[in-house]
Length: 154
Image 1 (cartoon, rainbow, N blue to C red):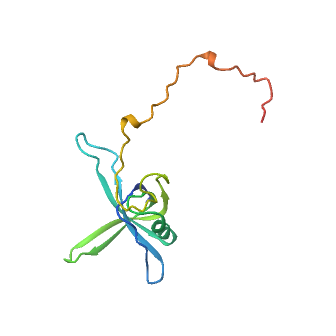
Image 2: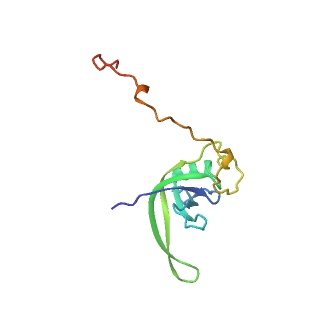
Image 3: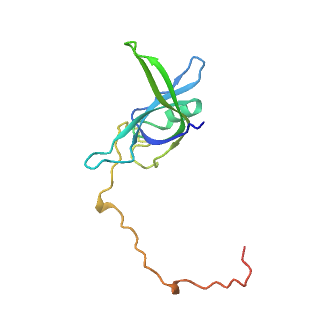
């Protein structure tokens, strides 16, 4: 069987470190993951996915990530059933993280700022964007002939 998940998204709230009665560190948090497609005339939708981290991963997330931080998670899907306060049976889906990674740059916006506000990804204004380099088509005269009769230098 195969149960593998890889996600990248932004935390929707600050993670909080908790401990089980046995002293094991655990945190649960939700990330907003943009969908890969956009219907014409609509805004991009996001899915809000619950993540669970245990032990040192939980401590790592709580120490270095806050609301709005970009995070990459890989792990597996876990389901559980419970009864809500009205006695209805419910099923919960969550990702149990095996590894978590920084996904944003150090100087990029929310990571490490401590501001605590969720800021969606913004595109740079067109006039501020760098122009793509142009390359000439080139010709055969641009290349040197290599004499393969000699020994290689390595």
